[in-house]
Image (tube, rainbow, N blue to C red; front, side, top):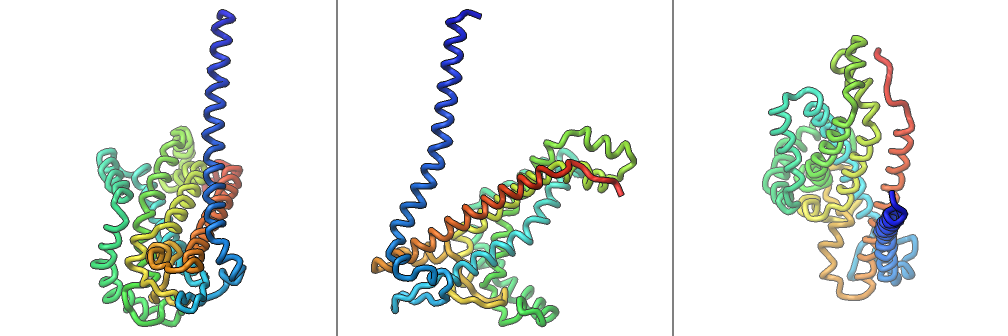
Length: 314
């Protein structure tokens, strides 16, 4: 290889490295710039209320009293409920499609599951208003109150619109994300893992448990965290079914409010600077929660990935 060609190749590699480095750094700069802009816009609220903004339960724009705790509570409860429902279902769908279903059936069902991610959130909201909420009010919530009413989570008047409806609609929305990522991760597991387990006498379930899931667990955890991140920031569908009342009540039947929903509903109604600043501070808190969540998700995925890749057949 000539010296001129080596020099050209080296320059090309350096240029590519520089361009990709600039792209990577630009993402960090964009995030920092967004955070600073929100902090600057929220400065009046931060100076006025301080940390009490996070712990205060009162949201009264008429009296200029603002507290974000009801919105933080509603966001976390609905998102965690969605995760508890969607994670096992999504993982089960991924296991079935990747390990058990026939190829034709796998292609059709996999496509339909992934199509759920393409449905606009406002359509989910309309479905929640006309189908999900009446079903919860007339069937699910009375049944839960009858059989599990001794638990504070299932006490109260069934109204259909509340944290349970918000959590269920979020579960449907994040299900395709968790299922698709888990399926792709499982598909990347080498077939030698499966063949070795089966050759040692493992059943189908034992093969999945000791050869597939341990190998794919870091990617599965990443998909679950990605679904949780989407649930935290979902706006329109949750706004339409959560009830939009800034209260902190233990019952899942009770109406609540989320951070994204209050910003969407009241941003155009903010008639003075402090009101607008308080809404921006809620957005800043949501931004911070998302960053912290992704940081701990990265640590979790990293710690899981360091573990053993297989298990023992029992």
